[in-house]
Image 1 (cartoon, rainbow, N blue to C red):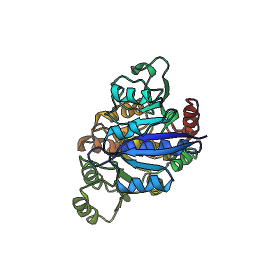
Image 2: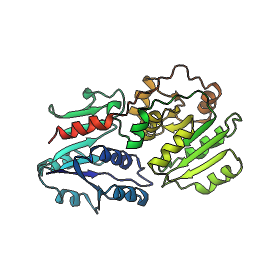
Image 3: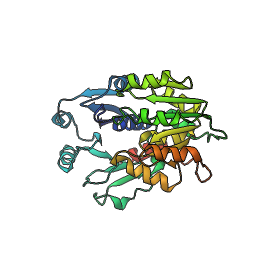
Length: 322
């Protein structure tokens, strides 16, 4: 009998979409052997559509008690978010469930059976966890959708840079998209500038004015995984934050300019920076972008750090828990 996996994650304009997107990737990695149900308080309709299209369950809850009451002994519960403290974890374990925690800050105590953090450079010793806790750490467990995993195996080679892609994820509440586009559009040698905004992006009106002023710029909004992959393959250079999209761009073989603007990006930022995976624009301020874009020195970059086999490793790790 197939085990049930209940994935507790949310996504919205205020929360961002990183948690639920990486959980969707995780679900596809293990769905061959497990029954999947997403349990959400908030989820954008576009992502809800993708979840249902994969024949995964989707249950909307009013409060956390709704999750706890719906658990059965032996269920695997995956938590991805910042409100799931030790008391909440204990309630899940007390129901006889297997607990998996996805984490990107290692700043609390865990009693999970498995902790997943795909940022490079993170160590078991960074965690306050039980002695018998299992770990899935580093890029060997990169949480990527199937199309990106397949592309990672092809080891794309970039020889010239003519097209640049700008994407700051699902919400971009700081509107770094527009700020970055203004800087990039001043550089004449880029033949095409591809801008991708997510389903929760709320500055489309002012962005469109810039798009209309320059025929090199193409704007795409709320792309599914397959369309996002196509846009990345169109571009040789990607300007993106050190969030989940950094794993996608590296798997596709783009030359990457990256930085951070929120604390939960620091593990990815520091880990990949130490691996020389991207050109560092720090906090995306104009002076930093100008400097890196002017020099565009890619000689020290290390390529193909993601091998495309993390789905196999993740499935085996989850199967080992039951």
